[in-house]
Image (cartoon, helix red, strand yellow):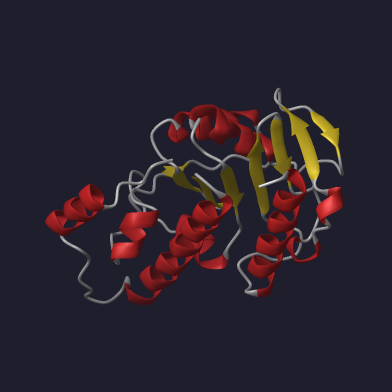
Length: 212
């Protein structure tokens, strides 16, 4: 797809997420890898009103070269790309149910959500929790980089999910699956529910490996 086509696609996906209340205000950001750098949604921009022509462009060194100033969380995206050479896109949201789960006491930091559905296993897989860091803290980039070397999806404590995918469609589909699973978990966590078994999860991972 051409750069202009990618810009239009980013704006459409961002608007769809905003209209479906997966992100609010000026929260959330999207990036896509180019042959010579990246496109990223701008800082302070509502995902519901992204202008394709004003989407930020960064060069291969991560330096801002065109468009509006990039998201202040660009370091999260660059940390993911640095560890995941196959990733073509990264999506970060402050989606309500995922953030709620990230604030819970006693969740498993190695794998936050249980395997409640086959599609969660197929699209997200294991979901580690990255400890809380203040926005803009350089240590957050290091924590994300360390986790991204082993996982394409993660949940930032008291913050929200970050997901990398081969394409924007793959990344956005995975983060939406994550949010819906977080919603299911909050609905059922105080009840007796039956997650997929270890054998069922293993079979899904063999048949549908996550390749990012």
